[in-house]
Length: 193
Image (cartoon, rainbow, N blue to C red; front, side, top):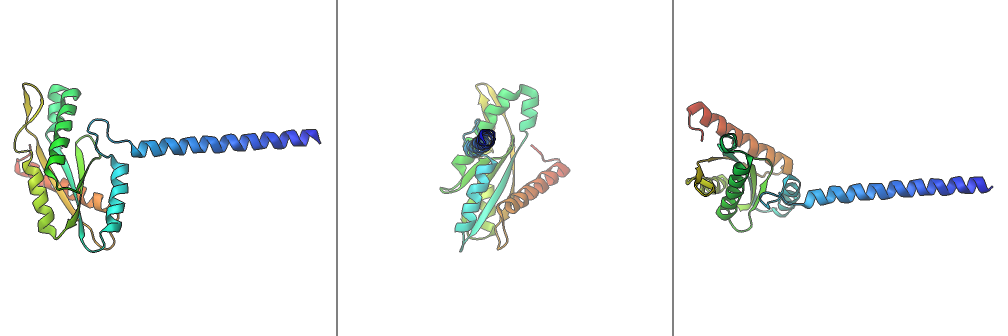
């Protein structure tokens, strides 16, 4: 009888330890989802998805624009001057993007050289492309990652607009596809930065 109770107690302890371990793993994953990008302080992809899903739910009447922005030429800077200088340029670029967007827009960093913007309240495609042009002009002047160091980058911006069946992932994918097409067209014409 005592042996059965001891085995039951051990089973309860094992189950409790498993529950505690699962709770710790969940808490760690939750912390990782809410931590901003350490270089720029901007939201990372998981936060972007959360904010985009909220924006989609709230955009019953208006369009939602998603802009995927690639820093063309940042890899060349990294190859020439190293990662620390390129990271300083990325941080400066993030600041330019934040300054160039409208109040209420969200800027997130999803990879080393790609940023995604959520632009609620878009009236039409021309409105979204106007925002894309405005943020691209924020890169007319070279970046200055360090004193005495300047580097010209160009911003390739792809635009996607929400529709009835839009999801956060489908909008990001569409904007990325449009941005990639713009980059390929520039490279084909010899106008890449």
